[in-house]
Length: 210
Ligand SMILES: Nc1nc2c(ncn2[C@@H]2O[C@H](COP(=O)(O)OP(=O)(O)OP(=O)(O)O)[C@@H](O)[C@H]2O)c(=O)[nH]1
Ligand SMILES: [Mg+2]
Image (tube, rainbow, N blue to C red):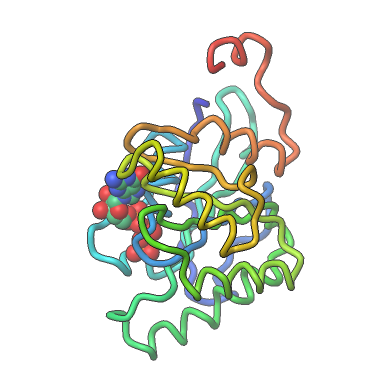
């Protein structure tokens, strides 16, 4: 889908969150899973900073996303810092909890959490804890298995099956995604539009994307 994207602000404290506006989509997951890359891939431009070094994103970065011809943003994308990275000092990650937890728990405009896991890494305790907590606070979420280009065929199926079992998520609710091949791209846009209450593509677009 073609969209126009604008960086709004970075927040390291709930007081810095922008006023709630369009339905928000949060990109959540461990460090280095590909949250910022997923945002860039979805919007088709390099708005979010990515890095080989885990711990790149240290604030919640808000982006307004608008479909061409629409007067107002249709969505806000929120790029979150990754959790569970040992090389970021404990004091820093403790500070993160001070704005990430209130964001996920209280943000009124938050419509959907995309929870990312790296499909090449076995399910982690921290992922289970995050999902448990999101269920507890009654958040709408969807699991995205990133870096799907790195494994193929049977290996991919086995990994998805393990994720499904370990994280107690039906396999049809796990979306394999790759920023390289763009597999999963259309499925994620559909889920985002549905969560935001934005009407789907017209019949012509459906015919084009399959
Ligand atoms: N092969 C492959 N590599 C990817 C993919 N998505 C991200 N990467 C790589 O993974 C690394 C981390 O990507 P980021 O998007 O910065 O990850 P992040 O989750 O935002 O990381 P933090 O901000 O540190 O939490 C980069 O080197 C990316 O190029 C993908 O789909 N396939
Ligand atoms: Mg990032």
